[in-house]
Image (tube, rainbow, N blue to C red; front, side, top):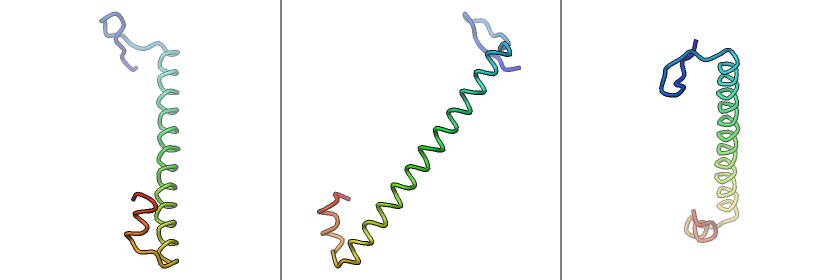
Length: 69
């Protein structure tokens, strides 16, 4: 059983509390996975966009001036 402090006393979680705790951990993991996927996609789009600008003939300095990166 998972332990929890209630009013300064270490106690076992009730089955309901443990189920809620497990669900919250699962929700947090799913949210983190979604955030990580969005960050990865944004990074890939940045790299792709910069490459397309280079293919059009822009220099790194020109791309930096346009994008700030």
